[in-house]
Image (cartoon, rainbow, N blue to C red; front, side, top):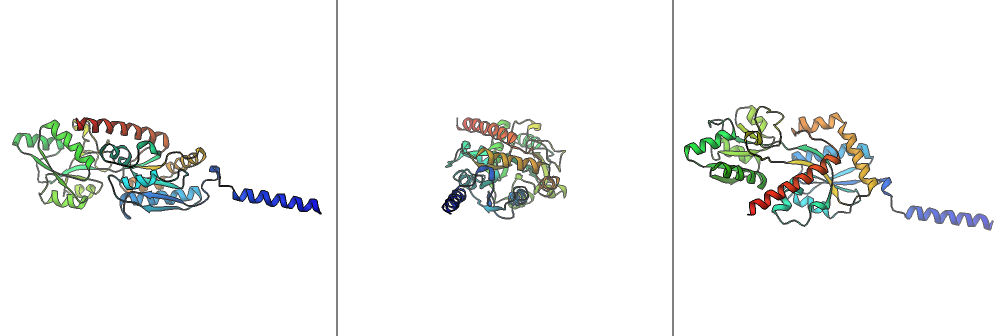
Length: 318
């Protein structure tokens, strides 16, 4: 009888120890995952984040709950919160790559580039420089040549510091005076350009419907490659300037994830890379440019972009 009681006590003690143990990384995830996003509900990146969360839930077997954290330069508020989260895989972030590669060079942040692990690129925000169709320009090169010939400056309505800085360098290289007009987003730029209050403006994917309706003219794709729905318009690089506005969207996590957790997230993104419905939602419904999924490409691109923007920032400070 005593032996039986002793065995029961040992089993109970072992059960208590097992229950008290924290979940191993190999059990990840054993509870809901929080996914931060840099924008307000309903915005393009928010819709992408929610689609990603839903698809990751199906693969991981746990809810993925979206939390909107807008604000800061290119989403630096979200990046800041992500950097301070426990590196356990239960807080992830979806946002613009510029928050990590560009903003730290130009603004004070309480995070560093090395505070993050980049799990996968998700899409490319397509964008371009537009003008009023009444203007005699078919390309951005035409606009600058016209300005030089007429001895006039140009007004440019920008969305953020990155596209403003790109146009600053181009205008200086061309010897053209550029006056800047801040915007309140795409609709304000459309109104100003169509109304003749701004010569040039920088727009995201909203430009497609206006260009196709002949309400705006696309002068240059500002992305690294041509726009998927307007492939006949050259990029800035193809028009002679080694410039682009790179607004990729990336899935990131705090640095220091357990290897098993990171491996599970990588495997999840490999699975989603083969999900045609999810990929088509990004490129067709959200009108984003396609990108290569996976951690290897994400880490390589982010490192290269961070170093490149750092050199540009240093050159502009001279």
